[in-house]
Image (cartoon, rainbow, N blue to C red; front, side, top):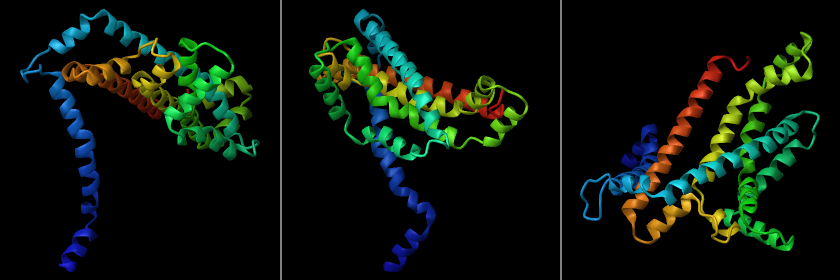
Length: 266
């Protein structure tokens, strides 16, 4: 018996069984349930009525468009703040860069609800109103590390000889950045955009806490429908969100592949 068990665990392909079971239970089955509920009614019959309801419901459509707008604004702000921070941290002259990177990533180790409640307390202490501005601030605060880290990693791994070659050819700092550093760092930028946009467009807790439920995002709409027992409509909304995230992932992957095929330097 022990010999059979030892032989079983010695086979490398058997090591993947726990991971396969994990994917089956926590990824495949939930996705199949979302598809099933999205395309069925309360009696279990096939229908497209859940999607028609979304298309014919102005409030849901407006919430969807508004959520995308907030996600785009948050992603742009994170990129504008995150790229300079990642660039500074990646410089060899910056001796404490690793310590600073840890400080930037440290908030990620704290639960997102705790971080958001701390933001609420900060606005209350400063006597600032909670609303759209607080929402964008909270989004940027929570997801900025997701932009900094991939860009920092890409800049850290960049071949310094390419920069030196551009400088030897007489390129000024702006040209070195625009023609060498920026193109080579595009994979990190693309990863950062995906890592910020995806959770921003689907979150609901941050909006609820930082706007006192006065601003509703698409994730909140999904949550409300599921909590109220409207599983079919909620699943359809979830599937729409998944399709949006999937399209975003495919687009960014194509951009990343094109960048790699071109060698990174324009």
